[in-house]
Amino acid sequence: MALSFSKLLTITIAMVILCHHGNGEKLHQTTLVFFMQDVAKGPNATVSPVIGISGKVWSYNTFGTIFVVDDPITLAPNRNSTPVGRVQGLLTASSLDGSNVSVMVSIVFTNLQYNGSTLEIQGISRQLEDYREVAVVSGTGRFRFARGYATFETLSYDPATTYSLIRLSITLLEA
View (tube, rainbow, N blue to C red):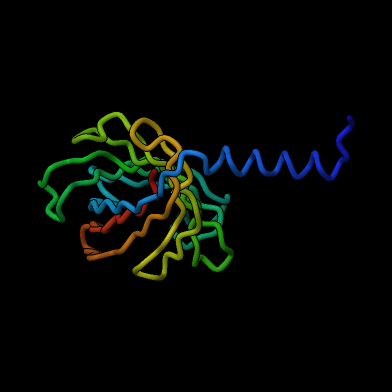
């Protein structure tokens, strides 16, 4: 007895749906809130330009400038509060008018129950806005297969020291 293509296709789709939803677990939302301590210049800089377009000033609003970042993250806004890990990766001024930065960073956890785990964040940060949203695209360890979104909210900026305090809120869907 030969199955027709349409019956075989229907059975295949049904099996995929059952396998995907077979465990019956509901997803729940988890939100983590941390604080990034960012310094753009000086001997303690945690973000720095590494390359840009020849003949142009390397800055956050100059198209083509690429930065490396290694910002500490803490549990509370105070610089001396409990460290949780670091935000490490690349930022690229990716729009001609300088309004957008492409973000490709890892949150590397070094403390608490997430020690050794990472979250991978990617997206466009509209840098002229105080509140920016990017995607959580994956993770490792405790956050393996993570998905969700992260927001960066600038709470304060001191131009004299180039110190920024940024609230990092991470919302994840988990089984």
